[in-house]
Length: 583
Image (cartoon, rainbow, N blue to C red; front, side):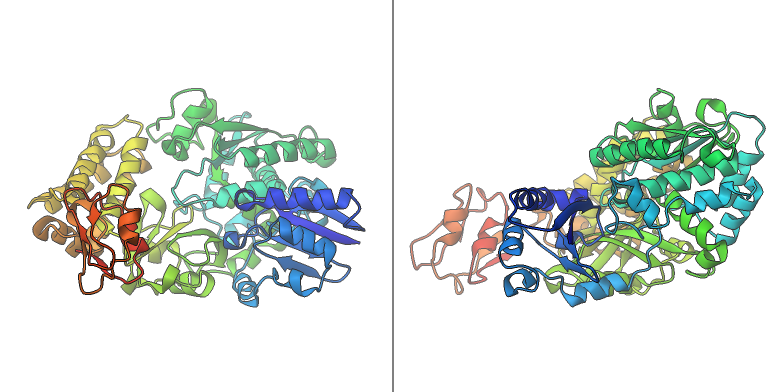
């Protein structure tokens, strides 16, 4: 019997996986596809190849990519091994890219059915929890995590064992374990994929953490914009309760822990742990002063521990394989693996998990296959709005917390936004400042007002209204906001500006002094013209201009009316003779 598995993570569904699944299901129900079992799985990370379908025979797994309803029909009509079906086979180069990764947090993603606890158990699931509850003390568990060197994967990279130990050591019987799944960085989708694809792994990791700190209640704070993740996690919690892995007297050990989900409203500031706690309590998400830290006074002012999804996703593997196995990977300062979301101007975007110590070049070119349309690499934004841009000449930077921090960027939760030669770095800084200014909770003056003043200056510069002194004023504001803000949102908001000023200062100067955008992206600083010698008078540009700004006779050079032109670029996109240039 064939087992057909359709990848139904959010990326797969968006690409049409549900249609493929429904067509396969109808063919099976109609008896056209015989001796077949149909199932789903989550995202394996190769988002650029979705929809992905795996066919399992008695002795092999065959992967088909960029499938459609026609694929389902061909599979029924022609069968495995046929030329028509083989046209959908995954290229070997993409298999090789997957083989270059080391998967721990993502080890089950794309390999098991996230909606069936039996699949997780068959893959070794809940064995780590069983090991912990069958004789390990709280200190034993914390020591294994300490040996592993696991640091928080939410961005700060704080030692996980230290946070767990602090919460365990705090007096009081009532303690809470919280998972921060409020993934708000533009371009980041690691936590979403883990919850959608392997929810029981998160549950098991959280239960081990709850046991270690002495918590009887665990909460997953997940953004409401992740509906599929919430559905699958809700289902997984019910399954774990039914099997006795969650709830009262787990596995007869005497340890009890219940778990629930809180859907957040999408405020970026709630990624900060004390703002998240305020939101959990029903208050507006705004950070608290620290100290006291959550380990001493957190949720309902009780000792609490907060880690993100990826951190907990590593825990079952570490407990099953030992702390030394995890610490043997990575660098001296950063142990284990890290999941990244490769997005932007990259050929092969998606999720990757690599051991710490690889270089940015290896991830972007060896795994991501380089820049779209073979354009020139310009920079990569690490750490989202809280991070910074790393330029081309630092492409061989080693990926670990210390080395990335030395560039002015941060590891962050794992967003890796790739930019090419067409990216305006001033406008990129403006984009991130626009985000953080809108997401500021407004509690402290430096963040509330400072980010807005910076945004106003950056907007003025990209609009061609920059003036001498703007760069110096930006630098002064950056330092004031970093030093004076209450929480990490404000303290890191200036990073995109500081790093672009550090590595691309000439672009700021060109915008201000020459009224030019070197990347030819800022509409107020560019103009479109038709090169008469190259124009053949085909009229394509005129026919595609939405504002009728182009005039000319057939087979005669055309002209663009600068007053009417809205600089949409449609003329250049449609010109077959490269006769339109941007100045």
